[in-house]
Amino acid sequence: MNDTLATIAEAIRAEGFAFVRGPAMKALLESAGLTDWNGFAESWNDLGVDTFMADGGRYRRRRFAAFRGTAEGIVRKPHQPHYQSRDYNPLNGGIERWFEPVSDAIGAHPVLRAILGTCRELFTRLTPADVRPASWHIEIHQFRIEARPGRAGKPTPEGMHRDGVDWVLVLLVNRINIASGETTIHDLGKCELGSFTLTDPMDAAFTDDNRVYHGVTPVSPLDPARPGHRDVLVVTFRRE
Picture 1: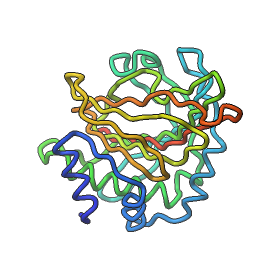
Picture 2: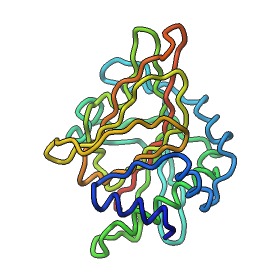
Picture 3: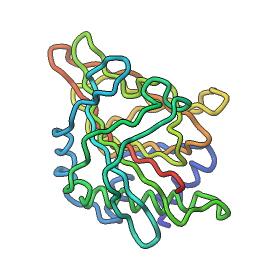
Picture 4: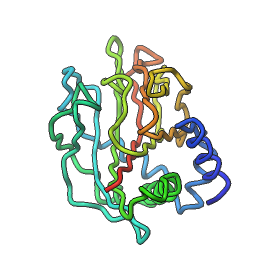
């Protein structure tokens, strides 16, 4: 494990989360094979509207894919629905949500492969040996939250929450004409542990989903005359 990954692991063990600035994350992912970041980021311009928003909002676009991660490698699974119980997502949970799939090109992209390989190494090492799985169920979500004058976008419309998995990565891809979007972390007693804002490409938040809640404040346009958007990649790991 390289020094950056060891530092991230230490922070997660101590606090239940880690906030990593873009330059450090970029160097870490380049060591795992990251290339063509711009091509990866441009794919956020081709996301479908999330039609499962129980609040009636049409401010979120997304694509979804699932993978299996083992010591032998990471393999994409057949397309499937995303499901969360209402215990974890009281707004949109309790149903199978079929989203448009992540494209084949992005599913095999060196940026995504670097991210998933790095996460598998980190999360496997963080998981105690007696419960460490031979295989991880991995889900990835490409999210775009749109904000327009008089209509804020909600990155976490369900509020402060856990995802019902073991580990979570939120990686900022881009912010265009966006204000706010502060991430807050709380412990299981709902006491605040920390807050920060993902502002630059590859700024990242890692969370231990068994130990902390996370949420993000609504986003609005910096310049009210123009629309804005916040693009993130969310990666979750759950023991199979």
